[in-house]
Length: 376
Image 1 (cartoon, rainbow, N blue to C red):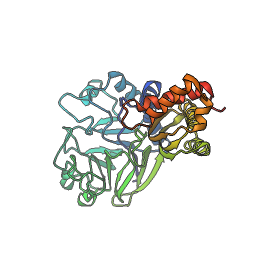
Image 2 (image 1 turned 60 degrees about the horizontal axis):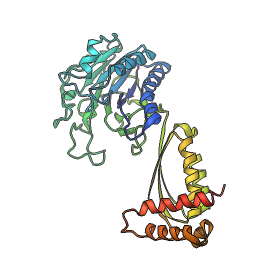
Image 3 (image 1 turned 135 degrees about the vertical axis):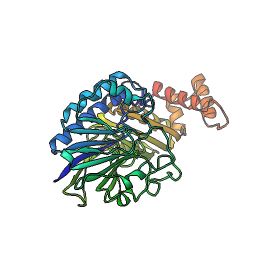
């Protein structure tokens, strides 16, 4: 009688990653198809009956046909049932990515749950999936309300599948569109309610979970990069929920104060420990402090190193001030026209009202590197 399935959501296939330029962004786009394959392999390895995908399968309705074809190919990793509902990114409009998918006549084990208030029977009738179908990007009403009155075969486990916000559990979501009642599982006698929209794995209650996205896609999500393996032994039994990591990329944020070479060495060690494979790590690094030119030159050298080693490095330096010391200036030149130019640059770099302050500061660093080097 046991029904086992993988709960996943928010694949957002076709996501552009416009803030990650070049090859790094392209690799992130391609990796999302590989993550679909990983979800399929997980379902096969665990002997699952189905994979339930709780919306935002695609990043937009206008994704390329190539993305649809590649997704259908990726689904071949798992021969069991795949169940999809639309989300706010890929709502089931009159003309949508879902109508395009239907025209491709997907295989019989791929179920596009697009008909409102229509249960879907799986596993020889052992489970009935109740889909909440977003036909617009934003809905004011709770589309899971019909679950309360939905009729399902006697003895079938009742599984809700929805995409939206549970206001009581998600920050800044009061008044948000596509609401889902926190008590829906209890009110509708659901054995489990599989939710999408929140990109981190989140337990609402014993029978209601967000799986989160299976591949991290930002620096801000809480506990992303997972899928949930859910096992229910019989109707009414508490679900066993196992969180399984599925993501490849690690998105990290770090703030650091830099004052001298020792701080840079410490930062070096911390960055090295952020991910087991640096090539799969994306790092947003926020720096603050005040440094002399020798320290700045050393920092530039290490940042260039990490920019090459990590998948992507985003450095934010607005809080990092250059304070050239007299020793710095003496190393560049003790007198003559070069020293005169250096003094003028130093003055402009220290003037907060000068619109070219940042340019002057960078020119000082370049002069130092040209005349002195990085200290390596």
